[in-house]
Image 1 (cartoon, one colour):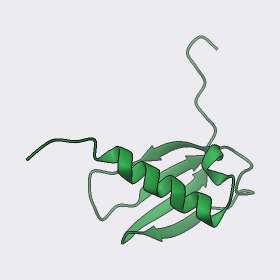
Image 2 (image 1 turned 90 degrees about the vertical axis):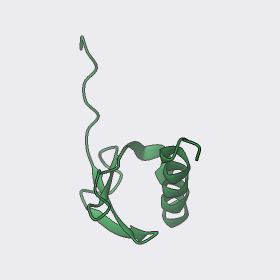
Image 3 (image 1 turned 90 degrees about the horizontal axis):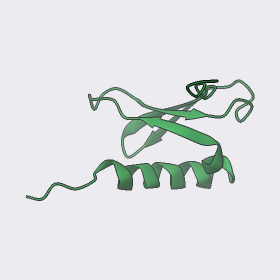
Image 4 (image 1 turned 120 degrees about the horizontal axis):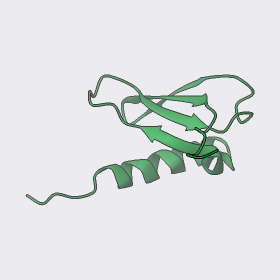
Length: 78
């Protein structure tokens, strides 16, 4: 059994899925959170203004994805 980077292929597939639904959407994503439990939704944060204040709930590979707007955290020293 080999250990691999499991999250990277999943992240790429989620980004491609979102891009298919809304072209240009992939560029607005700044964070994807994978919960420890399979039954909890994957959370995707996008730049404010991308969804006009809405929250999207999508299904991808039998997993729920919640897409919501969130401001990026301030950098240290700002």
